[in-house]
Image 1 (cartoon, rainbow, N blue to C red):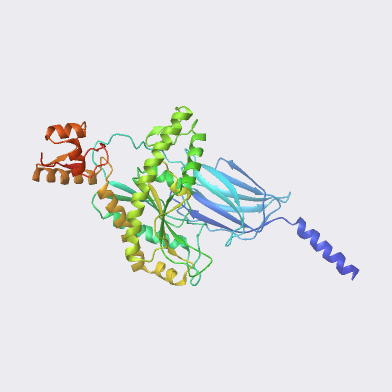
Image 2: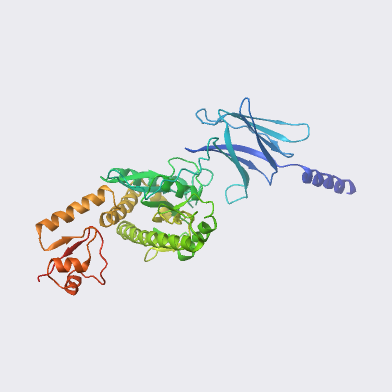
Length: 442
């Protein structure tokens, strides 16, 4: 018995001293970077450094073991191969043979319901961090009419599979990418509209990077596609979210705190050269306008979805999702259904249902932009032509031009300002360029 106890103590001591085991390495290829994920059976200490002649990236793991290799795709822009060896001091050295110099980033992830501990290494281009695309000022004058741009964001991706279906183990990342691609194709087929996908494959993009992609592409609207999940499998229905008050406040604080050296823009105006009060006012104005537009567009999408599928909730809902926080791009998040509901999981896998969902989202977006097209777009020009034609057909209509005021228009047609307001259901004297006013009989 004494010998058995001694043996157990020795085994326990050996287990306590044994280093972490790396169970495998996975590689994900994104358009702007390559991600390596090391699966480990516990927390791991590592050191990362680069070597040249030829270019290599070295990862040293303290007292770790690696029994499995990894196959690196031949068309990867950065990786040529991967090798590993145990050093005399017990360190496990993993060497990434590179095709070009890279800018690496590494971080550790704690276990979740699918994976254990992980070390993530992202490889970006050496000549600039591809995770921060150049911001294009939305206020730049356009020399020609442009399409309305809709950024379509498929949630999750790569190592982040999202929610998991109960009956068929369907990954959220898979179905939302399929729906996003369908939505993008429908948008691209609409004259005057164009879609950009934040991701078009099975790879992960950080949440704020998705916003930056939309801004770099001059998006007029950001639509993030997801699938909901709940512990009760009876929960069902699609829903639409916009940013909450609390989410907007926290984002405003974040932007203002970074304004001293920020390259981010608010409606084309940099905050870094403004004093605190002015920066706060500018940001508040931008956020208010963006959130109002977001709500109007999201309500259109919600009304279309309820025509073709079960909806969850009675109206557009508010939340603090990170992807909704862009101060200068109207944004919404569409939960296409509950993947945790066996019936809706089957629907979300069905191509016809995916197409119906995509068409519903598209119709809501299109109807909004037809009513309120952004200036300088083909849709805005088409609406102005329609309004001008209406004005020509009826000489008692007036198309608002720059410099017009309600009192000046009333004087031009010899009518009272109050009569002009009543005829057009105006609560005040605010008018906008392109608006058509009906002129009452004098």
